Image 1 (cartoon, protein in one colour):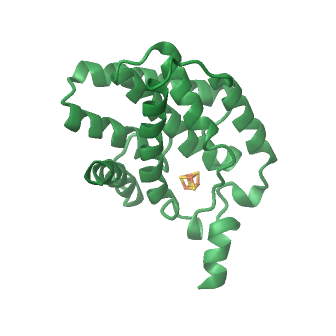
Image 2 (tube, protein in one colour):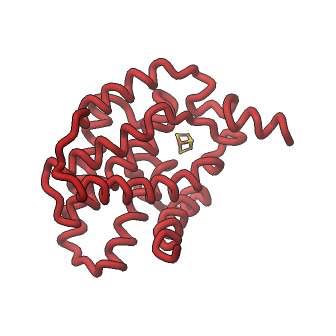
Length: 197
Ligand code: SF4
């Protein structure tokens, strides 16, 4: 519990900094900015990594994020939260897999898994603020990224769905998501929270 709790705490710290209007790195977006640093900070403090390893992992995460940005979207307004948290989760999963010594195939598998298991995730921020469900979602996505990395590292890296296919599917799914579930704050959790208040 302590280890997962630490992972949550690091991701939450960044997401809260964003919600408070502080300084964060949009990797890939403000709303999902806690996932990657959460995982990296956890690994650096628990595994005592040197800066070189972290920088190399950041480069890999950046590559994954840019692939999504170029081939699909990282905007919740365009494709829902799968484009924000899904991308952040894929970036963090890839980074961690590299840090833990994964092969390129395992790294791609971890990223693919992270994207695949966020497909369909809607954007429905309560009152239109990037706080609920966003802040908590960062912590959960950090632990999911961790799990995807462990899963990929436990395999030989072989998998059926490629990262590119998962990204293409995310874009297509995003286009099919009704506008009320794309960063408007008028559907889903946002709507129900207002209704049940
Ligand atoms: S729910 Fe919407 S605003 Fe919140 S992190 Fe996801 S995409 Fe961003």
